Length: 294
Image (tube, rainbow, N blue to C red; front, side, top):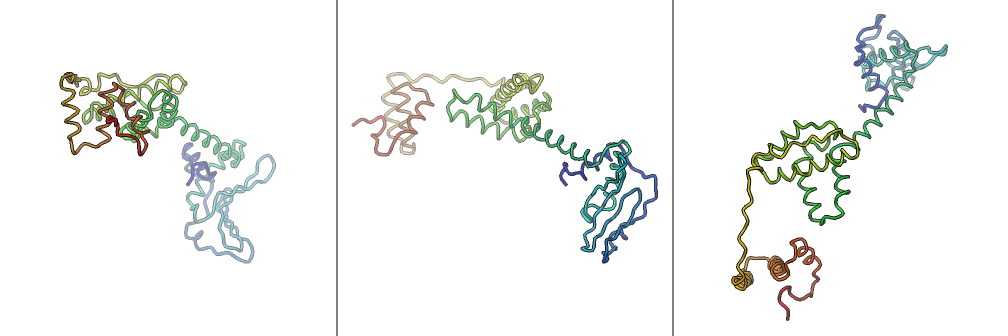
């Protein structure tokens, strides 16, 4: 049942206000409702307090609530039987009577509440962590290589979105981020460090947009394994070994030709890795072999 239907709204209202009893004796039973058959003219089976099971000659059974408000008689259709059981019809009826006693038309209340819930749901969808992360991606992708953008998107999808992606960004706490990141730190410290950095930036973006009051991202030191990890610089290749390296690279039978070309470009041009990858992506069939001019 949709949370935006009049029936659902009346059921919720009855529960919220603990409307559990009637000031009259109910006349119907589940067995009688089930057994009553249509006649040649409309049949009306009163339960009490204005609640009636209406059965036209076609056989469809409908719950109706007849009431007076502002000096005029009104009829509220509660729902069709058996989709709406006798028990649920009575619960909704109590909520409708409660509203009428306060001078409120039940259907008008239900329509207004349905609009409010729809607007609230839309706002929630627009302010989930996933939605804000996507806006952050778009806002910060301009000066990044497409490969970098896709890499961070894939990392967030795999390690973060499953846990907090569907949550409203304003409801996410430091405690749950701490739990998620420290668990990731146990199995993949480097990934945990990157994810924490992305999460911090996303919350900074949300903070600037006044969607959150503060950034709940835990401090870097909570990632114990990532903090202890140290990068060991690799030794530079001596210049007098460069020729031997290139010959060994050429003779490596299992190395992909594209990888060989990329390594030659890196050595001979001192380009960035991302620039070499981009250049190789633009090589067309028939172009000369990279690194081997003829």
